[in-house]
Length: 270
Image 1 (tube, rainbow, N blue to C red):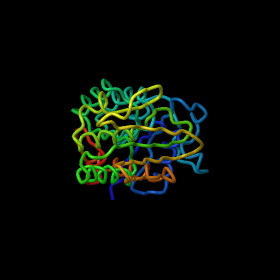
Image 2 (cartoon, rainbow, N blue to C red):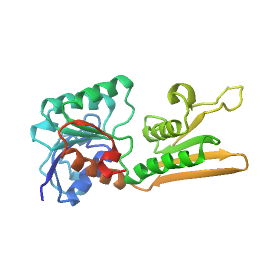
Image 3 (cartoon, rainbow, N blue to C red):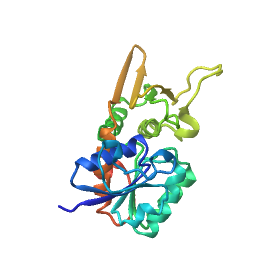
Image 4 (tube, rainbow, N blue to C red):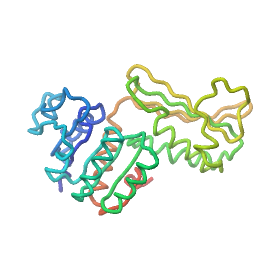
């Protein structure tokens, strides 16, 4: 069995630690470096100290450490700014990347695609295997229902999550728009607030609602609303373990690619 060597960017965050935890228990993977640029309290600690274990890998704040120990793949749960700096190092060293960070701007995504001409990059707003099945389910639901329904998307996360709506909610909105024949979703269909709007719901409008509170791991619900009835599809995450499982599955896939820009469905066969 070939072991996949992993570096983790954002190792002090909730997702970074969950990935490291699963690496510890899964002999198919080995942690070779851990970098954290924001939660300084973790720097210089053993990467597995939070598990009460010793890995021999100290958390570093220098992005160059991600590539120094020759990982097969870097798994990134950090910030868009850290991700873009990391990609330069990985491209120069021919190291594949799995990106679970969200909140990228269009120009950053274009730069990411440019790097994918040199290395394999898998970008997913949500690494959960269940959520990625949800994407397929919503695609088929839209095709079955047609465009005779009003669509609202609700997402809920913990109070420390910065971006809103979530990347997953936005991706769900794009799936709905594409499969119901809506025009350019971000410009003409997506509605993020109805405050002070003195008008009724527009045709082809997709509404978004965001909840932030407590330690909610993640919930996404789509409501397909017609006169007299509502069809609701919901996915709820009770722990971050499912995201980490998906990230490691993605890492295995990326480790076998030479270059290219991939989605989670490429890794799990959706």
